[in-house]
Length: 456
Ligand code: CAO
View 1 (cartoon, rainbow, N blue to C red):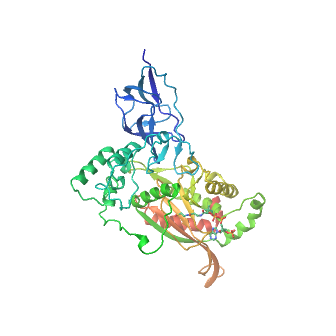
View 2 (view 1 turned 60 degrees about the horizontal axis):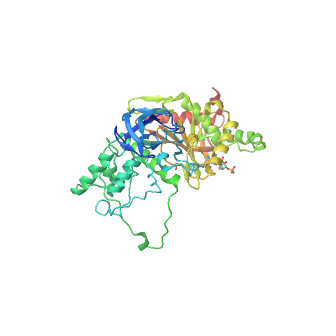
View 3 (view 1 turned 135 degrees about the horizontal axis):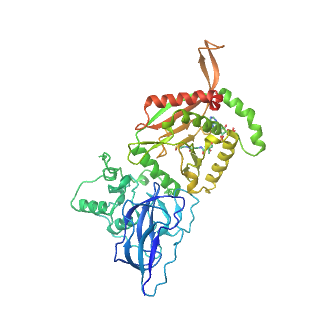
């Protein structure tokens, strides 16, 4: 007698709800154990959910666009003759979002991958690479990281199509199987494509740029090939997406932190006894929270329709941390409820975790606003890239003692030496106007010059 089993979404880590973006089987299909059933996608990653057993698909319980979570029913599976009943729930899906700490043992078919990361090939089934020359001149450098599910990647590989050249028509520019087919057809009928024109996000203005220059660098001198780290590839793809899809403007300002720096030094002894530094960054987080309360549209995200602003009533601040493998942005949660000592201690902990590659994906999620501080390194200003789906990021450069003209108070009519901190606020101009950004940075500067304001 055949057994019909409910196949459900396994543990998908911290992802509460994900979209069903592909259904890879239909009723009547015979599937083997590990055959991919559906592809789901979070804002950061795609994952194929494999069948935990062999059998015949009796009935689908999901459709495209459904939102599913752990335990949601996918389909009914009739076990093949001789098959043991399907164990439920199937093995836990491992997350491999941009974290160096992702477990190495994650099975490729169940691993949540960053959306633009190429799918790992199953070790036991090597897919022969076809000779792709007519479809993808080998010398071309992909100028855009393609966003496609593992099965579409496999399909493209089998056809020898370079996904970097395919325009995605799915949500968020995702490349579908139909897009790959259309691309191949276009190439075969000599349709003109350029890497960026092909890669322009769906619905966006296609770029029509000259081909990427192909240069044999070795012709000009000795070179060495250094593969990009996994973190750099993942963060690079996200930075590229954010850079091309958000209209950035950067507002520059400076804050007089003379008193704040003196206060920080005075108060630092207590934290040093406990083994951490009371850093300027902790005060910056505190001051940013005060400014975000005053200007809530900076602590917000556009919703997926692009028609509403989601104003967040919590203050989770992302902090860019430079690691030998690239940039990561752990999030300090509920910064509004923490004092500067607690923030400083937590900053020391997360930056150590980041550098030791021990951050978990959850440590980098849920941010509402980010700060990138290069002050300890140098520079006078820079233009940070917004960490989508946030709408603003504060860049901080190196403070310097400078003569400032005083026009009021006791020392009116004189230059006085003041410690000035350069601020660079990049914002999403779809959401924030220039005037609002200027108000935000001047308010922030006023809070930093008199930190008592953050108590008000
Ligand atoms: N101006 C002048 N000096 C500064 C400063 C500023 N704005 N900010 C920090 N410093 C000084 C500190 O006083 C400290 O000096 P001492 O060693 O003499 O005490 C030194 O720089 C190191 O500062 P810190 O230990 O307080 O570290 P931090 O809080 O500045 O930075 C962290 C911590 C994790 C943010 C930082 O290590 C880091 O990774 N920064 C890089 C972020 C980045 O790459 N952003 C780029 C994103 S866009 O590509």
